[in-house]
Image (cartoon, rainbow, N blue to C red):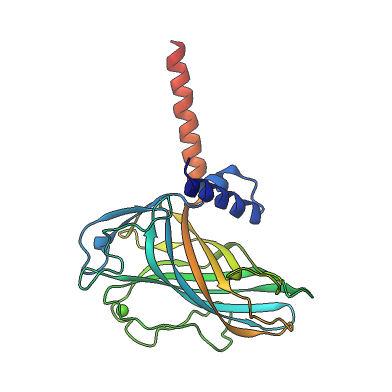
Length: 272
Ligand SMILES: [Ca+2]
């Protein structure tokens, strides 16, 4: 087993642990394969891409709305699809030159509670989340996080170039959402982040071929190092965004039952 696969499996285990999910179905399904058909995007040639992750950069505006509650909204831009070894997949139209090329971006808004500690660390618990994933065929959309405190769930609005954009997925159902800021001293390159799992996704099935339906797991690792909790705070944080897909647990359960059925049939055949 190569290191990246091991890391992926450990990451899935860590996600499951972070979410307090004892179900092995979750542990094995986070970061599972998904397939998109690029010709669903205006101008892109037919090309079915099977990937394990969307990876890119994000920016969010994070603000306290009281000593215990926060709101954040942000934008991520997908740089590449990643394969199971976390290597960018070549030969796709994602971020390729016009007119075949297209961009992908996401908009998110989370609300919840937080607890700040004397050492500068803090823990966030999301209580609501909304997320949209968009394709930008002309690669011309300009959108940045709302830098004022919006209403909970309000997504950033593009300032230009959104007329050609195609809505690929919408989620308003928070399954689980947690965040943390590490202590001020000795934090690493990022120092904090959010892990958000959303479901009840309405998606463009011409683009997202499989799995359907799916959950989206958004892993944000941001530069929280200079973010000062007093505990009042407001500011912009940027970093790395990883987006994973996972079949909805209902479909996993059905698949598991189907596999059990196949196994049972196999044993019966062996006995004959
Ligand atoms: Ca556009």
